[in-house]
Image 1: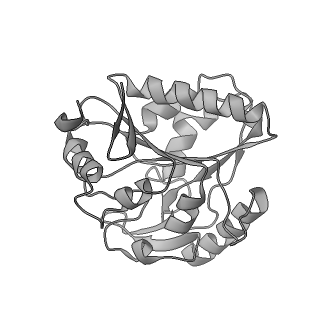
Image 2: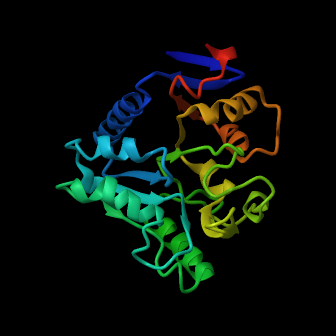
Length: 241
């Protein structure tokens, strides 16, 4: 089911993971038919795990895909709670053709330097706007029950960042220190796709679609066009059905 509400483009389906997987595969194939590389930024957390597992079975030209990480927790290498470790275990390790991957480096030693280094990598590997902002073709994003997206939480330091592309910021315990893509970098992307699932996301999805809270990071990101929402039927607000 495709819907438009308050200028939000929404896809809702009981099998939303298959819907977004198929859409992403088509997007990558179409892009690579005309360009040498496709750039993709992935998010961590529990919601996208099934998507990554489905993608791991797709026989694409993954060696022509550049993969970045939207946000990461400041933890030692090998920690089971790292977003990048989840992406490796659910997705990357199964691919015969390996993507070009650019996770943050030495984040646990010096998070600030890791952010600056990642900014340089982004500018080296991607097209750059006149304002010096790297352009990623597509970002896969999520939304928390508090309206956060990436590691931009309501009122945290990243919410106010207007110049940096990647910054150190704060999140709730137990992962209080993080690094994250910022609004300037997220807004420059070719497209932003939100993946939302579960009954506990229904209330926050409704607030975002009705624009009742201007301080919700996911709502602000959705104002950057084009942004597309993929929701399962459990997270879809009743007023959209």
